Image (tube, rainbow, N blue to C red; front, side, top):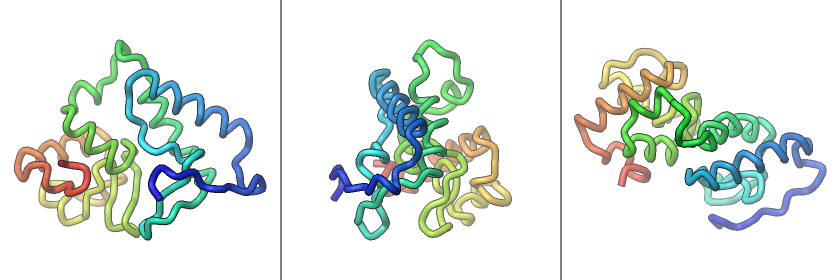
Length: 158
């Protein structure tokens, strides 16, 4: 069902202001050459079972700062972007939409690069990867990529 629009009853749509700001940022990110991934407002959210459901208000709110970063002009100085390789940027975008607080796989995968606790610890991380600062996640993902290659991210690393 990937890429298929989903019927969303008007009673479940988020408030109009949130819709407009999400769509504006999504379109701006695409115009600026970023790949913002799936438009969750129009195309819904793909579940683990392959079905598509309507995006929740909180998912749209969490997506807005990511889209804002992606829609920033290329000339704007971004500290993290200059320290993160294009390969890691692509992996992070694919894995979590670039959200350092993302949690997936029923809580198994955490943070911007969707670390497991075991993998996080193997590169010197402590605690919850999703609670670690973004710069630390970038640094530890770079260590993992250098040590084991992109195979650590079987879907997004190839």
